[in-house]
Image 1 (cartoon, rainbow, N blue to C red):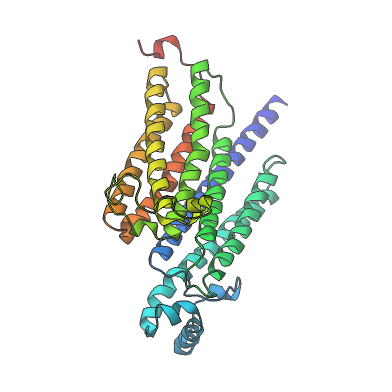
Image 2: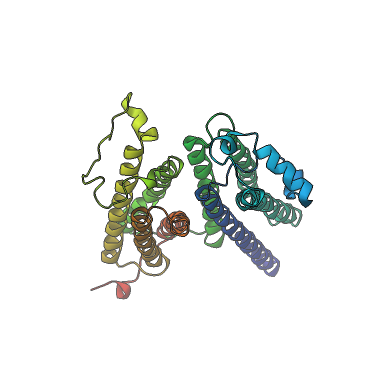
Length: 361
């Protein structure tokens, strides 16, 4: 009987590991989806497909007649009429493929999630505690697709640009889905929390607090992207020769400045990013003094490295006036920083009190 119990435990552990690996693969696909979405935005390709066909839209236009029909549809909408009038079919194809690739990856992502999920259910590798979490992920993924189309529709009416608020919501939901999957995967790989010393408990609290903070900073970056605020005030650390530029908080009512004012939105994002770097540097110094070992110290090292790279990418993107490769790398860096924060928070949640010989003298 004992051997049977041990065998069942091993089988369950192997099943959990398989689910975790699958979730990490899906996380990688979501990561690629977010970066590709950023490139689509940066290349002004997001309004090239003017309808939403979840099933038939999996195929691009077939043949010359199909391309001409798609181009004719595009010419009926504001982006062509107000910005791209006179665009050739070849130029249309160059922006079409970015948006098509973004939507295609989204469809493949749904397939990549749903099929293994059903298989894990059938083979009983998903328990009652895990199943609702996976179902929630799938539902959120569907809502993300709807939100993406809701965002695109905002640019097909009068103004040939998507709502920066809807863009930010679309980005935010993608990051939330990614973070939720990554956290669940970490829990499956390292399910048993360990004992924490009082100092480590405080470190863990700070690390967990950094997760929603970094998410908030990412949202402010979404506002910067949606308003093209990175194309203004391309100096650092001053903006137009001053700490706070002219026009800062100039809109009325004043709360709208934080969502709609280019100067305010960029000011907020750059200084929130600097505060983030200082908080992480403080966490790293505190962790060194606490004598952490293993995954916790790896987590804070990764966090410090990620924020350093992200600050360099952010400043470079700004002063070079948003070149597409750098801006895409900056968006990828934001997600890597969020990943590092999740890993550090989870690692500190599991940090075990080191033995006396492991402590720094």
